[in-house]
Amino acid sequence: MAKMKCAIFYGPMDVRIEKVEIPIPTDDEILVKVKAALTCGSDLKTYRRGHPTMIKPPSPFGHEFSGEVVKIGRNIKCRIKVGDRIVCANTAPCGYCFYCRLGRESMCEDLIYLNGAYSQYITVQKRIVEKNTFIIPKDISFEEAALTEPLACVVHGIEESGIMMGDRVAINGAGPIGLMFVKLAGLKGAYVIVSDLSKDRLESAKKMGARETIQIQKGIDQVEEVKCRTEGERGVDVAIDATGIPDIWEKTVKMVRKGGTANLFGGCSSGTTISIDTALIHYHEITIKGIYHHTPLYVKKAFELITNRILDARQFITDTVPLDELIPTLEKVGRQEGIKYKIDVG
Image (cartoon, rainbow, N blue to C red; front, side, top):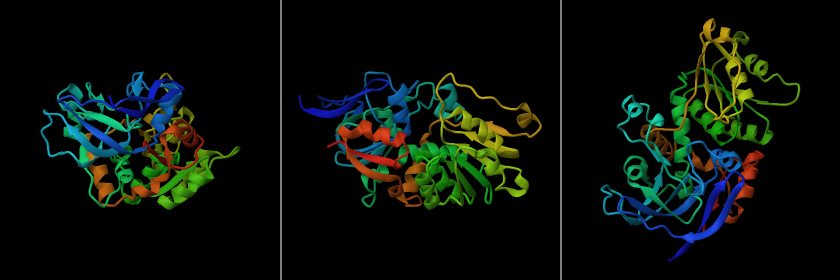
């Protein structure tokens, strides 16, 4: 059997680059040669502590990718053909369960996941092929298209935040997801204020359209620094967490004006908690919400934002590194060095 290089997740802090057999697609799958795989903060968190839903070890690792169709199972009935350049999302909802019928497909009770982007070949299930796979235009590179999945999550988050033209929006965290929020909030006509520890990432936020930035340092009151940049120091219309840190969740809620919205987008570790002054919810009528993942609609919107170059995906790719350097590269992301990296799987 022919072999390929593949990153295998065995558990927290245990990912190995191995030679494994190239998968043979079933009648309900397609086989794709991976052309671009991107690093993701979720992959970093999964590497460090596992993931409650997305991956069960041992398993091929990685979920943001694009590639070329090599084989197609006989039960795949759609316009995809061998040789097509495609990008896939990493999940697809069933369309029939309680939550899908409510229009909350990101909460699907039978959401199927796809892992294995950090490998030379990957098989993609029929449901994902039919619901969340797109043919890449010739003028869009594989690495640009591979940004579709994380961008779809942010499109979901933006649409649920209720941002209106001229709103003041605070975004906490200037990592890859935070920077996508900066870009999309700017497209909504918002005045964007970004907070982060990293001076370099704040410079990236400015390039993405942030109007003001706040470097978090010892002695800096992050909440007050944001509020003093709003009319009457009342707070922002919308505050978004893109860190997944409980302490920043609490600060995100405190930044919001009366009647405003706090979007706690970043995923925290299971079992962690936050404290909220009940007056903020009752007397200030603040809306607090969490947003998870994406839906086929938002995947389509993200793909179109990239292919129409409304969002320049090239701004988010810092460098290309070989598969053998995957873990050191994820750790670089953890140290806030760069934005996203293309993993060359060979």
